[in-house]
Length: 391
Ligand SMILES: CCCCC/C=C/C(=O)SCCNC(=O)CCNC(=O)[C@H](O)C(C)(C)COP(=O)(O)OP(=O)(O)OC[C@H]1O[C@@H](n2cnc3c(N)ncnc32)[C@H](O)[C@@H]1OP(=O)(O)O
Image (cartoon, rainbow, N blue to C red):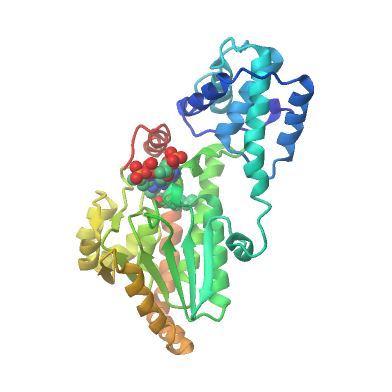
């Protein structure tokens, strides 16, 4: 497969391509060496062997450099604004201007070799390391003292939930529901608990287009939230830092929520052109009153840990300096309680709501499916991805 056929998906916007150019420029400056045609062909073969998708940004760069190296400067008409994928590719190629073919060839070879080591190493983890022992890419899962700890582990991305992480959390929850631990804890690695849905999830558009993307997203979300509704053991959130979006809404389905005083709770759905999920349209009004729930879920009011505790969303707040120590001491004591008694007590408290929660979940996912196709949502995602806005 040549790079002409490579699949590149971009969000429903025409401005994403600006993100790729600075890095391309970086490679343009490295003209000292000259790659032979053989090096170039080897690099093309190496690309096919990459075990992991290098991501849209890298694929666009590779595409542009390939075209420049084989055909010279961009020589095709600019695609229309709605032909998003071809426009992104054209923009990337066109941005190379009159870069000589040999330099493009060298830059292509350099880029491939910069992608290869990291991608190869991701499949060569030594036995006994965390990832190998847990088999997770986006989580750290450990089990000791009767507690299974599921730690969101994308600290450089503020523990944003990408598609892989959704699947891995579901897998970890299913495993925890069957292991011999008494309680399960969800927490985050780094300074954030989680920044919510990874907004780049919106950029990988399948052949069926944005409608298929939205449909798949709704199916995934429904299954994901369903795992929390059905989780049979005490489920505890240790909110170690700021929480955004779905990482907040899900808290209504936890059995206890312990928060550092550094944590904040933010559900900016209207800002994002989206609507509540995680059953929060049902749990939040019950937990904190409809008016307070509307302040959070509709107007996007960010709560401090103290405020969230006063509203009943958080069970207890701890000073950040003693958060880990105090909460783990408490959890270890909980985990010594008879597990069957805890499981049965949770069941009797939660079970009569289960059917309702599943119905709410289904409705929220269906509403969100429509929201994801709206201009309001697409513009918000594009603004974030093109670094025009943050929360
Ligand atoms: C399929 C199921 C869908 C379920 C529906 C769920 C909905 C939601 O969860 S809505 C909430 C979505 N989340 C957001 O809108 C948050 C977006 N992020 C931000 O506004 C900011 O990143 C921040 C306030 C969370 C943190 O700001 P700051 O401290 O300045 O840190 P950076 O922005 O530099 O972030 C570092 C790094 O992480 C990337 N990142 C952070 N959050 C996300 C995210 N949600 N999605 C994708 N990427 C995220 C950020 O882009 C930075 O990456 P690099 O630039 O590569 O370093």
